[in-house]
Amino acid sequence: MMKCKECREQLSAYLDKELQERQRLAFELHVQTCQDCAALVDSTRRAVHALADMPAVEPPPDFIARLNQRLDREDERRSTRKSWFPLPWSYLLRGAATVAVVCIAVVLVSKFREIPVPAGQSVRQATAPAQADKSQAAGPAPAPAARSGGAHVAKLAAPRASQAGVVKAESKEIVPEGQAAQPAYRATETEEKMTGAAKDMAALSDAAGPGDTAPPLQKKRKAPALPRREWKGYSSNVRDFATLVIKDAPAWAELWSRHDPSAPVPEIDFSRNMIAAVFQGTQPPRPCCIKITGSIREGSRLIVFYSDNDTVVQPDEEPTGSFHMKAMEKSDGSVVFKKISH
Amino acid sequence: LSKGQAVAEPQENEKRLVELAQAGDRPAFTQLVQQCSGQIFNLAFRLCGNRADADDLSQEAFLHAYRNLCAFRHESAFSSWVYRITMNIWKNTVRYEKRRHFSQHDSFDGPASAGGRGLTRILPDCGPDPSEQLERAADRRAAEQALDVLDAQERAVIVLSDIEQKSYAEIAALLRCPVGTVRSRLSRARERLRQAFEKISGEGA
Figure 1: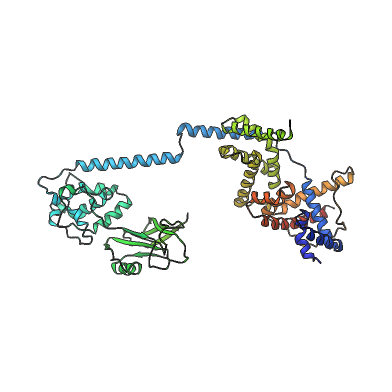
Figure 2 (figure 1 turned 90 degrees about the vertical axis):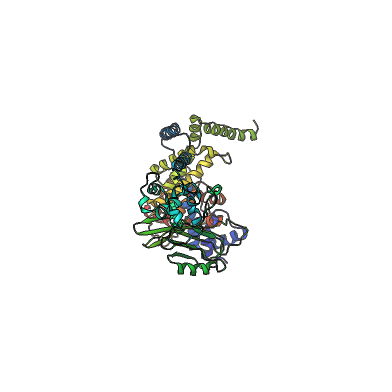
């Protein structure tokens, strides 16, 4: 025998003829013997029928006319946009970015070509900074060959991606104070034009003092190996999620030994640099890719942005915890990590 | 003309109009709007509860359809497509603007009145009796007011089921929720509608 509670629960389905035959018979039997439920059914049915009985409403007489006016405005907006610039905004932005990159490249190349090579300057001296990069933390003492003014030609040998960094290193450490204002080249101008990323690289390359040996002439355009400035991957021994800032060598060594004990600790000049690191950890165990996406400075505070998405870039490698460690210009203020959600 | 041809002809006509409109023929689009403006305005009116908001909603739906006409692939009737657009715009409006109609609810804790009506009582379809016509008109007014008491989700499911006469599956597709959710939501909504209807009918009597 159906109870009132069940009857109320099945009322809506009964009105829509959604009950099975057996349920329907039980429902109707209950309603015939229960006045309260019968009243409920009747009242609900009345309300539902009243709704179905509602007359249709007509749209306002000027509905189409007003809509046409709006469509006219829409057409005008479209035609204005097309006549001014027929392509979508994204094309405009891409084009502008391409033009800007080309202009910068042209300016840089023309500037470097104009730089005179001092008479009697040996290639060995000129390319000294390239060798210097191999000894990353060799200390601030510059080699005598570099001191003699090889900085200008060294720019010819600078790598495409790291020209600014090498230039900065030279301007600060290789050119003696007395020659800093030589008319042939003003390093500070180039420095001002450097992007934030280039400054990061420059700061790193500052750690590399000039070396004693230089590569042969035919290799002068080959990019010297810059110190590595970031480490990322999908397998770290750091098992817990962490966002870290490393500002000294002992802490760096400790972190690296936890991260990958089998690999040697990369050398970083912590007088100029620091390391921002994010580790996904293995909890929750899911394939993902954590990475540092950028940083901005707010007063004395540095905000490091990182993202954590669920895409596996290397599907053949079983993810055991993605990580990203990045060297950046040292900040004396506080460092805050902010997650960017996509 | 055979029956199949009679059905196919309006569909072909609509398809031709849509293609013309997609090619930039404004009169063709206006003709499409004229064919379904009543249906869309009615849906908007039942969802919004007043003509001004219904006018805004239906105009916005047609404008959206015009902007995105190239995305229409003839997988459904044009009116069904605009119908879905209307529902989506309304859902977004409800989600972000907290419609005033649904922000405050009266309480209907009073006991359900027995009313003394039997199970088999069914309202006459179109009885000529003036008293019955008056009663039906009163019921319609009460039901319309009761509809305003429901929240957005309840209102949507009642409008689609009891006014627009959509099936559970169609409602589920329009509201993007499982059929089971439609069933339970409709049950709750009808219970609240009944309570409001009884209260308003009792006050009016």
